[in-house]
Image 1 (cartoon, one colour):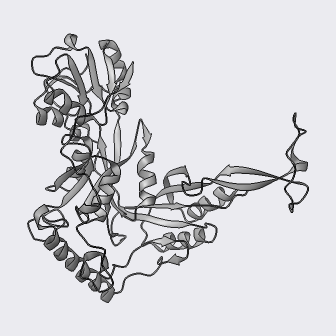
Image 2: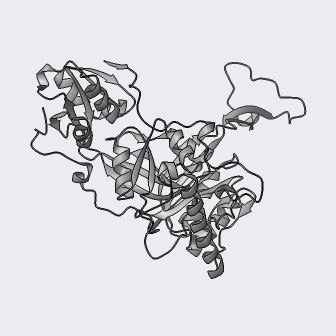
Length: 419
């Protein structure tokens, strides 16, 4: 049995129009948003910067603008301890890079942020959308957000937000997820009657929780469940969360590694206002989104631009186009079998042998293992643009090649592995 309960108020970042630290001023303002933008490796309908490498002068200009923007950001955001800064991105100021994540301290997203940017200052946000806005409004320098899980699949909300916002993917982190059963100090497993956690965490620990015979209650995130148990001193109530959450909120670990499948990983994306300059000196991954016209074999033709150039695709995800969810297409009546019910009449002005119908219009998100700096990728993008009404590069960034080590998820010691 699973029910939904609300999490308590959390001291995390909420955004409102008053939070916009950088004013939307007219041309000529010294605000970061009005400064000359760096060369962007971005491709959208009607524009193409693919295949135009930065000259030395352009690269120097990019560097100057980046330093100037950081200085202005620090001046504007002094009460917030700066945005783009510090040891994490090597600007030498000593101010830690502020990195937004969704959740509360102890969340897996916070662990991913600290792994992506060691020494950073993590900034909790209530919603995924708040993390995107925090970067856009110069409240933080980066955001680290989940995009897919090896068991639960894609986080569709963040795919939609990637298209809605104009941020760029600048990195990825693959984090092993290691669930623990937490409770107030002195509690034993047989005393538990309820267990709180995120719905996906509950599903990933279903076998263990079923053996315990507890009621499963879903809350907004795993660390939020631990925070609730601790702050409200909920006796007889457990939480499924990380060992870091147990340390932060002073809870006991009743069982360590209670997930049904040991190989449980979440992939996170690092987002920034500006793209990084792609290179070929290390393995890169590139993420794009595009649409296609309706027709037989159009997706096959689109993906063939990569196969023809030996570019390895690592992911393809289709999502209905939110701004244009339906489109009208036509079928040849003569190719249809005799229907049990009469077909609707042909609209005025259409060919008599045609039948109109509505279908979903889709966006295709594709990841591939190659850098945008490679000529074969630039040629593939040009080729794809010939058949794609809309095409946008979300980012070209270094691949996460770190070993898949479960210990990096903060697995505890001394607690039993299974109940």
